[in-house]
Length: 546
Image (cartoon, rainbow, N blue to C red; front, side, top):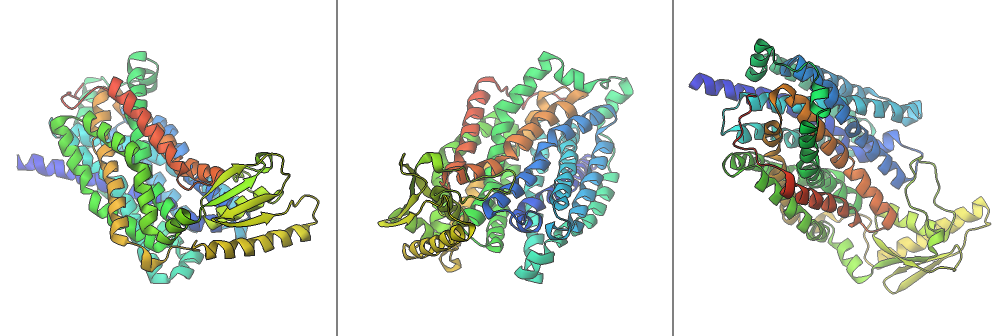
């Protein structure tokens, strides 16, 4: 019995550690998005540059479903173990290459293009990794313990993020903030080559899954896993239910709690990057045991009620939680918005959406554009007042103070530049007089309360994510399990979740409301809750040796 337990522990340890390192590689980019904006997207206005950096971050997620198809097929035909050895090597090589990649200043537009290509290689690798690790552990786990055993795999994404945070924080402290922004940001990427060596060695010690070995011996492995998984309605129907009744909601809760919260603190609440990383790391350390608890609990009461409760709590409480986060992280900004709200009055026909996918548009053709561009760069939330027929000028109100912006139409470049410069000075002084800070005051950040809020957000993540590997494994037959579970998981997490920071930040840039982006995860989580309550089956008592 002890030998069996030691074997189970080795399977969990080896699979989990390898997956931790893959997530470490993948999420370094997200942590360093602000710096990467400067390194690879220079020459673009600040708001657009940040959105483009987030889009490059999301490129890795965009290709994850294709990785799921390629490597899921291999996993069901060749085996679980060898497939995720290949994915790990691909991930490690791509991450190491990011650390060596010259920036925009050195090679121009080739830099962001190469960066996106490397992110796509990372996404392909991760598309094959998760399904293999979850399937491998579940097929070793005894009945009644699959939720608990696979919950260790569920901790790996958070532990990978936590490891990345620790190395980023350590590097920042070791080389200093200025050096880190210049060249030190490369160190965490380069360190990944050491983690790759350890991970590959650990994975090489594993044997193939007993369920797959049995299928191989009996000759019952699938010859056409893609056709069986998605070409037959009986299985495709379960894939769709898994996607829209569980995974999409899980994905947006995961990325809101662990990534959007980070972007929100740093980009919108103006908390410095090092402090943001430390606060997130503390919250992750406190809440991560929740994955194991909810995985264990799902073996006793079922997967569905825990996941559905997490989705509902998130949808109901996101607005008050993020409002409280602003209150405790940047109280000066919160107080200024309460007592001196900012409005932009202009003809809506003269107002552009403050997002340029090409990265070269200058938002200075109208008074409205000049005003909104300034406020977006300053991280100030504002509301819009439509005043049709007033021409191309605009008015900004900060509390009782009003600033007029003249119509820039017909001005020379020098005159337009002077108009923008003078307006910027006046607007900055007006905002400062109204109490709007340039950045969050470290002395006024209520760090215990910020950590408490972040911990609640991560606990929601543990509720929806802890039991989901076991649920997905149990939904599908063993001969096509790797393929069937990987695709909905990576569509949900790669597309609905991975694009969340980009979508939410673009929504903020378009409306001026720093909380408006929350509508995206709230609506997706709410819709998933409804679909899941109606159609998602309970699976925790199912046998998986079929």
